[in-house]
Image 1 (cartoon, each protein chain N blue to C red):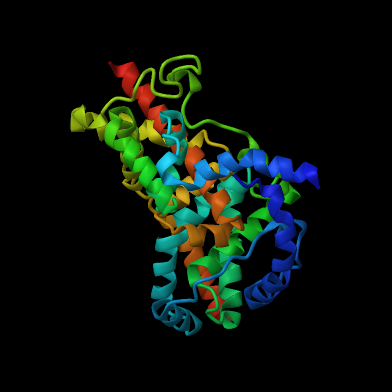
Image 2: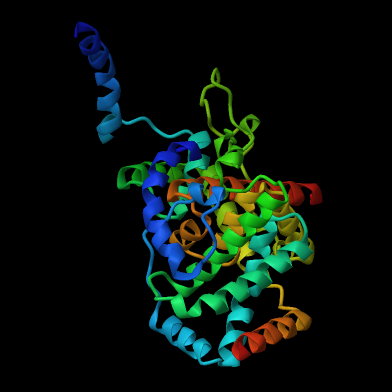
Length: 102
Length: 255
């Protein structure tokens, strides 16, 4: 009993630091790069988001990094879709006609 | 991050619902690989999709051509993640279309048409991969894609722990918007993106293809691939990080 209580007490400062925005730790760039996808997909908690945006405001390196990821995504999005081969389409239409008859 | 293995318990309770789903269009027995898929909450078929299905049931060829043009290429790309050769993947896609047509009367619109078609595809592709003796992406057999701890950026790019600002950029990334636009959009850049995507592990390749190239929602991807949203994002994060890195290398080589 004493054991878990002592352990809980030892964790208190950590829990406090995590939950209190006033004494939260600043993010390092190394941590920011791991949050980029969650940030861009809009799934960060409001608190985490604020922390990240605070970092971005002072860090041109991380701003560039996020912009690089954004540009990568838009380039991926603009890749041309490979068209369907005419022969494939013909084969599939044949399949469709057979199915229709059955 | 949640490793895939932690999900297996939750998956069992999904199985009952999955069986209901399977009776809707798939008359295949539940295979081993099915045990590892997660059925997420699903969006029902839209009115447009239900109309399309109605047209197909009446044998409207135009409706079928519409579907082929819309999904054939994506289906082929996804099938190629499960099986080794393009020819085999093409067969899987053809079988899927057959399955779609035969299952039309049982489609009730409880999921979207797209999800339903692609679930048939991934089930066929998994069966085929197992027959080939290959490990199936997204099953417990290939968790490695998610479990490995892969940093998004090479740790050497950051200042060491004993420096003044540990974990901050030692060599910060460049501003790509300063580059001439024709370089950013050149054929070579596009070729680099493609080769970087092709070099990704299968599950990462599947997620980045569906999400960033095809523009699918996370929900649709999770439903089709049978993965959790968390794992979907981990895979997407790793895939994007690698493609960005490949582009960065390429732009640096050019300087």
